Length: 148
Picture 1 (cartoon, helix red, strand yellow):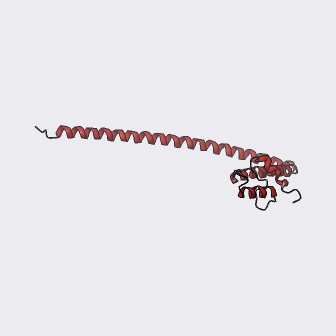
Picture 2 (cartoon, helix red, strand yellow; picture 1 turned 90 degrees about the vertical axis):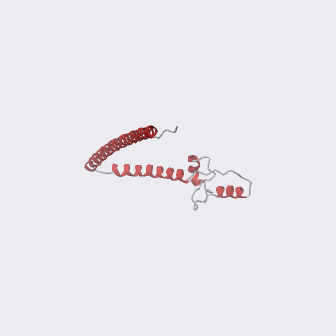
Picture 3 (cartoon, one colour; picture 1 turned 180 degrees about the horizontal axis):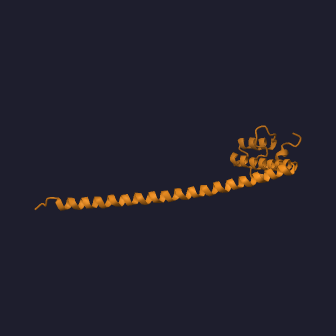
């Protein structure tokens, strides 16, 4: 409260065009409240706000960064055997991810090939029906009684 909301100033550096610093309802940001009030009085227009999804993504990115630092600190305190186990586990997981990625790509390619084959088959069936319809039409014309 002593900083009058400037404690959330990093938000402003991430999203410069947002009129707010404190985006959560409980965050003390008197400047935001003043600007919002002025907009309701018609003295300020076109207040710009960052979509909640972008704010959430930025929060998750920051949490991920902080978690990475915490994990690195925890790992640095581990003994050599545990670090070796961790390295083997990561290598194994990377192999699994690579294998799954390869399989997913193969599946995608197979699905694409099946879709193309199905499309070709449908086109072949349509051609057969068109040919049959043309033959039926020509038979009808050949057997139709002539009007003299």
